[in-house]
Image (cartoon, rainbow, N blue to C red; front, side):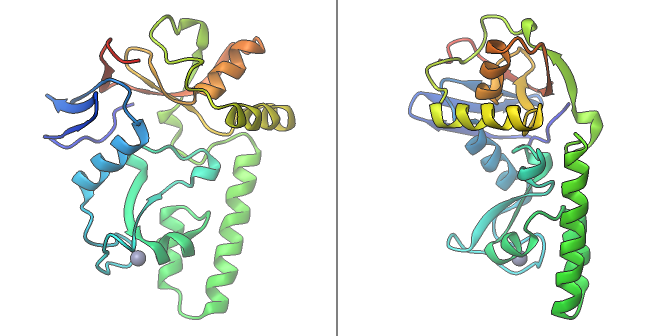
Length: 220
Ligand SMILES: [Zn+2]
């Protein structure tokens, strides 16, 4: 899939860089991928106004919402992120962006409560039926043996996170979110998922392959 990118973007932190040239995002060094995605989202969508209630936001009230909720596999990429105020982010809970826009138009609190309960139940049921709440065309069933040496592994994988993934898999026989890969097969998100899959002989996982993101080789 193609992620939304600004025409111009440059970011650096210590020995890590991210920049856009001709519609491709290049990442060099040990960059925090999610942070880069947040910065790109602010560049594309602005950071001064809540894109749900339209009220101004300050550094104190600014948050980023996952339009398709993170709980149901919604990834941290600009296509799925929206700058908003804390109140909207909290009111939205596990509704999708479309559902929340309808919710905002409702007048009474009881209407709102009823609507949000209904949506969240519906979203949960969809997710339970092994479907992430994201567009199907974003997803690729990926054979993990295709991932060669270009991968961050071991050193950065947190034990607690791995344990959580492992427990989740035992309970549901699936993973909580798709992994995110660059065009040249670097793992940008989901190291624990891949490590769990490799250790347990699971061949295929759901992946978002970002066709316009390339990791440069000197990354660690
Ligand atoms: Zn708001």
